[in-house]
Image (cartoon, rainbow, N blue to C red; front, side, top):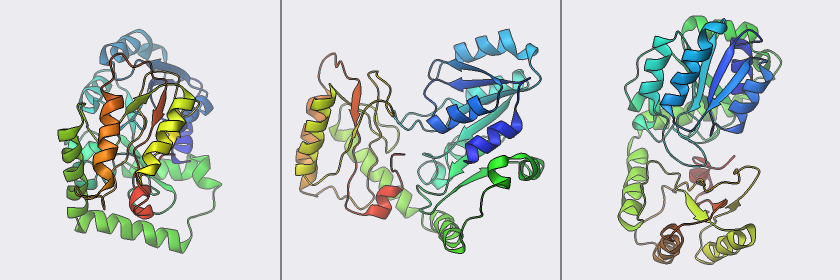
Length: 299
């Protein structure tokens, strides 16, 4: 809802949106609802983004570049520093969705903080993952927030969060600030998996490529027999391509946990297959602590 209202308030029929092809569905829907001209650029392709800016920016009143910070199906980062440089060069705004960066990167503050970005941008995120509550947020300049309070329909016409949800969100933010060891422990688990899985791991979202739907479901059941809840992700949430699925790591997971060796072996068998023809995915999750898992849950 935060993305839908913010994008539609910032741009309209006379404007241009440039969006990463792998953006989350809420960003895509927000772009469509805005009535702006929408162009997608190949995932993380800065050259393609600049080509669009060079060809189309001067034809539109405003331009908004929209990207996830951490991509929910692949776990990689947006090249945000370079995007900000292009935005400065072509007088474009940048909206970054930190749904999967909050509580994970930048000591819990997200990719913007991790990269030390100080230029003005629109930072959107959720309160329902690492913060452990409900709803979403928009962070930006005082003028931006005042503008959105008066123009964002999803703010104006939506009932406010309940006192309990608000208190939970505030407490979640406080925990991220006061207990950095939680984030540190998560990254220790990520580093551990880097040593046993022969593939780059940038975030707690780890892509595992699998084959057809039946095979994907069968492998998910195999993981479950090891005590790990790993639901199969397939179209439409995951596009029909050889792509990644979210593999959130639970912070309570220990390296000595009995289910881990068998799970890792199974992961290696599929991740290291030559020439995978995957178009369906698995998500590496654990039921060991539901609240911990909701930190990195799949939408």
